[in-house]
Structures are given as C-alpha cells and as structure tokens.
Image (tube, rainbow, N blue to C red; front, side, top):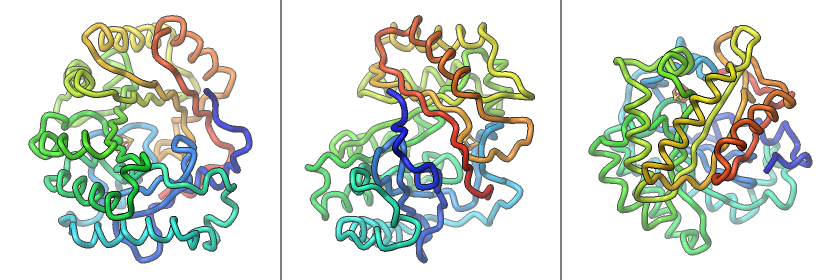
Length: 303
Ligand code: SF4
C-alpha cells in the first residue's frame, strides 16, 4: 500500500512536538495512522542510545534530565483526547486543513525525542495511556497504544512490566530494523555501548513470538548513494530469520527521509528508487505486507 496522494503534505509532515502548554503530549496528523496520532514524548532530555544518521533531533540542544510526571502526562492525554473528540482541535490553525476522513483518533504513540522504553517509568506512562483511553471509551473503539522503539530495551524491567497492560489495551510494537549487516547497522544507527544487530533481532523475536508486531525500516541516501543491493539482501535475510524463528510480523513499513535530518550527508531516496528497493524486498519476503512511505517535499523545521 502506498501513501494516499490526497494527503496534504504540510499537514502530515507537521510533527512539532509542542502543542499548547503541554510538556509530553502533541497530537499530529499521521500518514501511518491515517488520522490523529496523539504523540507522547517522554524523552524531554533528547537522550537516545542510538544516534541514527537520519534522526531529525539535534542532540546538541540536549536539555537537563528530568523525571516524567505521570499525573501531568495523564492530564495532557485527557486534554488532547477531549479536544480531538469534541472537534475543537480542528479550529486550531495547525489542524484546520485536516480532511474529514483523517479527523479520527487512531492511537496514542510513544516516540518523541529519544527511545521511550529507556525511561524507568515507561510502564507507568503506558498505564496512564491505557487509563486515558478507557476513560474516554476508546479501547473498545480500537484506538491503539503504539510503542515506536529501536528494540534495544525490550528485556528491561520497565518494558516487561508494561506487557500485560499493552496486551489488553490494543498495544502494538513498531520496531526499528534499518540494516542487515552489523557494519551497516553501526554506520546508520550508530548505537552506543557496543550494541549488536544480532541482539536487536533477538529482542524483536522475543516480543514478536508472543504478539503481532510492525517492523519499521528507514533507508536513505548516504553521500548520495542508496543502500547497496547486498545490504538489501542481508536485510531480507534478517526478516526471513525472524519469520523462521516464529516472529509474527503483521507489516513492514518502508520509509525514507521525510523530515530534515540533522546530518547533511543524509538525503531522501527518490520514489522510483524506493519502489525498486520495495520490489526487491517483496520478491524475497512475499508473506508479509509492505507499505511504502515516500519522502515529502516539504520537510518541517529542523529542531
Ligand atoms: S532511535 Fe529514534 S530517536 Fe534515537 S537516534 Fe534513532 S531515530 Fe533518533
């Protein structure tokens, strides 16, 4: 499936993480969600254990570390949900041009300026999201809690503690896999602490054996070049190994750069090249649906 050509690119690329006076919560119109995704940014300090070359976060603007205040998060979630449900959201300049078919809440998504699962209070934040959905009757309407993660912390106590709530509150993991070889992984994701791609895949497998997951992949041009065919092959091999190991992969999302990256040597892959990469993946991984997310012409301001 491809992006709807009807989407106004300015609407779907405006992912500013500041909304009203909120600290953690920011509604956006999401291409992936095809509706409102209520973002939760727990990483106000902009820390991440990856330093992906395509990341749009400027970590030179890192802020002080501070704890997540769960009551404040719960209050902001209630506000965002209420404003979207009442229709008040569409009166705001940023959302006024949202087409009618996208005026629906699809999910609460934990992503933000770093890796959300690294926060010790991650499970409490997930519980706050589940409670907010319940208060507004949205669990039974299928509104999800999406955890967008680089899959480095899935064995941590705070993630282990969150599984029960996620599994009973439409929880879904969207896990990053941008490489097939360790060398490319180090070059693109630039992990800290000697992290290996094997370890990431073990983590993905441990979660995906128990529940359906989404794999998110972003390929970009580095110094003008897309990933080599051998790297795409190695990436397909990783997916095949996950499937052979029992991973329930419901979808692969293939992205390229859609928002201005902090590294100047990184660029969007043109649509025709991304189509070729998608075709190569589909040829090798025929059992998993693949969605393509092209780059956007109008990237928002770099943070
Ligand atoms: S894992 Fe996400 S937040 Fe961290 S560097 Fe990569 S893209 Fe940025």
